[in-house]
Length: 121
Image 1 (tube, rainbow, N blue to C red):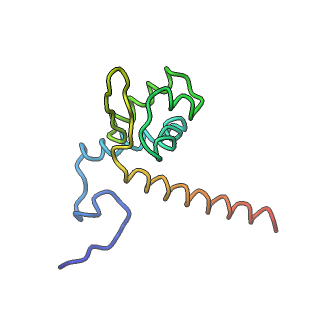
Image 2: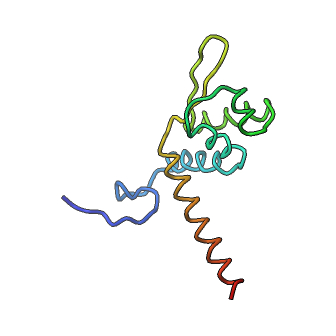
């Protein structure tokens, strides 16, 4: 079995560059994550599914904003929706997004610590 060196770049699993279509799908996902209110919604859903009213209470966003951001996250494949009667319940459809968020948060935390060290000397 051949081991591939981890490069941290798209296509590292196959060792081949990704197609333009695949790169566009990845870019859509990153664009969806590039909005703080969408990250708030993901954070609110990390503990389990919620309906729009619960997400409004958890995030402080308006109903219009919650609905709009949920649509973007669903289109990106990050969230899913389940209807129960008149209510829709939202959940994280791709749990790997939580790993990605933890990784980015850890990286940002380290960066902030390094910057704080520069000012403390």
